[in-house]
Amino acid sequence: MKLILIILVLFSASNADAQLPESGTYTYSYCYKEWHSCVNTCTVIINGDSVTVISNEDQSVPKGEVIDKGILMEHTSGKWIIGQRPDDKYARRIGGCGNGPAIIDFKRKRFRGC
Figure (cartoon, rainbow, N blue to C red):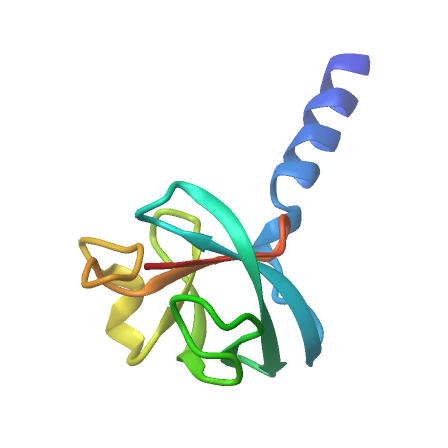
């Protein structure tokens, strides 16, 4: 019985990032794929299943510039992405920077850019 309860708790915790956050404005870490680190922040504006990501820092992307904009969708890999069309949830490659739709991590509050 305890084992079943533990499995259910772990399953629900692992799916915690499988839900869209409420509509609103959030500050996320801006993680650079090339540097393998998160060194800046960005503003993430969620309105239903639509999202706009705006730069907060003036480094590789000028402050206030839209970094990405699109539709939030769960990719077949289980990761959340910012797609442009419904077919993007089946994209062979994801990760932004020419590698398909960008990844957004609601649990860790991270946006992965170039």
